[in-house]
Image (tube, rainbow, N blue to C red):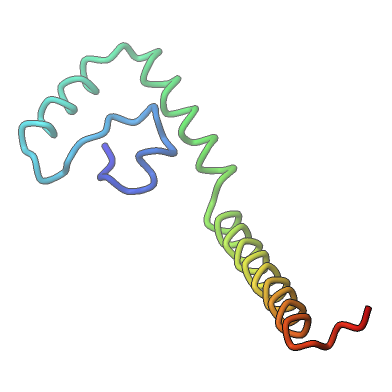
Length: 94
């Protein structure tokens, strides 16, 4: 059972509920408790594998890489803008 966070998209095997909805929680608990043991094991194994692979360290690393790309893109756009401004200002001799 997962609230509507990013985890709900990352763990499709989970039973997704609104934790403030008592009826949804009760239904999900009933489904989970009546689910065949093999299905329970398959679901939890899959989710544990995803969590081990995509942990907070990998998430943080990706955030840093994305931030570096944004910074690099802004720097490049700034250089392009400077070039366009200098061409409009008559600095170009041709």
